[in-house]
Amino acid sequence: MEKIVALSKRRGFVYPGSDIYGGLANTWDFGPLGVELKNNIKQLWWKTFIHQRRDMVGLDAGILMHPRVWEASGHVVNFNDPLVDCKTCKARFRADHLLEQRLGIEDADGMSADEMSRLIREANLRCPNCGNATLTDARQFNMMFKTTIGPVSETGLEVYLRPETAQGIFVQYKNILGSNRVKVPFGIGQIGKAFRNEITPGNFIFRVLEFEQMEIEYFIHPDEWEHHFDAWLKAQQDWIGAIGLNPEHVRVREHAPEKLSHYSKRTADYEYLFPGSLGWGELYGLAYRTDFDLRSHQEASGVDLTWFDQANNRRFLPHVIEPTFGVERTFITVMLDAYDEEETFDVNGRPDTRVVLRLDPKLAPYKAAILPLARKPELTSLAGDIFAQVQGDLGVLVDYDETGNIGKRYRRQDEIGTPFCFTVDFDSLEDGAVTVRDRDTTKQERIAIDEVAPYIGERLRR
Ligand code: GAP
Image (cartoon, rainbow, N blue to C red; front, side, top):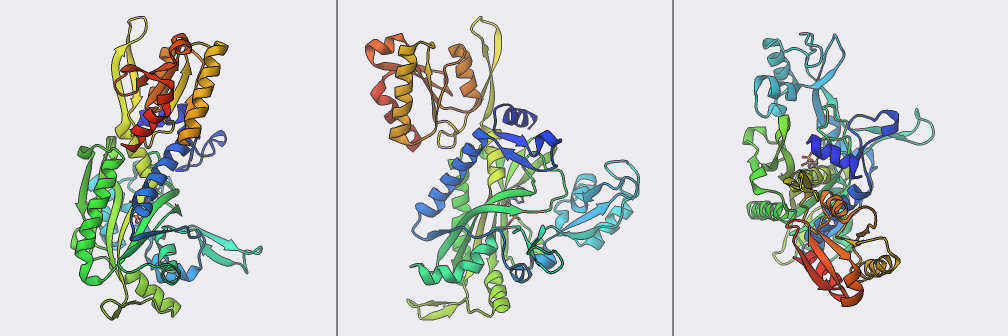
């Protein structure tokens, strides 16, 4: 993980938030390459789950919603983290994490605060920060960030920054039904920011205060939930394959029936084996949420959210299967599985380590780099033409680099995951061809300049 964090900062993928002010815990900013990788993840997700399916539509709902939304959804009462404070050093910890780490308890998050407090007292657990046995009882803290609409805080309307994108979908479900030719079963997908007042340190971007979710609410007839649940489990598995994660680092964990949320009949998480002490952690979730959300919003708003199924002449409140994906967790796992170090030799024959980010070309920030062998006008001019042609033909991001020796330039591209480098040399002026070097194999071959754009295009479609 440290290597990924260091590479991310060095090469402009992810920077600590507010860095020149000493940082702000659990906030990170995505740099020039990070924003490209993140956008590529989101675009591939949108294409896969919205554009390529006839049963899905998209939505972009607001971050701020009426506070009654969060009362109806249960977040005001239930969206809590159990926290303990150290009376000596004032450090604050998640009680469930403490029990999991210190007592080896699995899934402590399903326990009540009283139960957690009892276990902490019985085991006489000490503060992980100062070592004193002065931990308070566990108390529930709501994780939603609050802000106020209006210039005067006393009279303004108190609202929340959404802690999940899902509720925007439920709230707009009726408008979407009324304005689109959708029929149950169908789904609404959304990508957007969510905010949670997380206390536990983040492990890089694994757990942050502000993150993006890619969520789907799939509306179904209740009789068909098992079939749809299995189909979405498979669709998530296929996605994990498409972004190139190592199957050995991914597993499905079913939530035990007694640990399910009150509204869920079945929940499964895709977990990823993170390095170091983090271990297996949630990557994505899949939940059968029954009709809990639509029913709660129907009751709270007084608006009828049932659907009339003309084909079968029946009216019902649809049930929901919810596949949810975190953008940051996708980003981090894609980076972790792509990162590789290869022992090799430098141009002088000395042992050397080649760092290579074996990203799927669809996700790589730059799809190719165009490199004139020397900074000579005839080479840079031809390389500039090829650069413009590839950008024009494919509309993808291509790098151009004329600084340093060619070996170093290849290494720079390897480290940021650029799958193909095209080198323009003096022969190119005669034979109208360039050398293409493959990031993964380092094999080189000669291809015609006219073939450069089709070469990249063909590999992006694979
Ligand atoms: N609508 C359901 C929902 O929000 P969740 O399991 O709380 O479910 C969904 O969150 C996904 O969002 C997680 O699987 C994870 O990928 C991501 N996620 C949740 N909290 C996060 C955080 N603090 N930082 C980064 N990603 C987070």
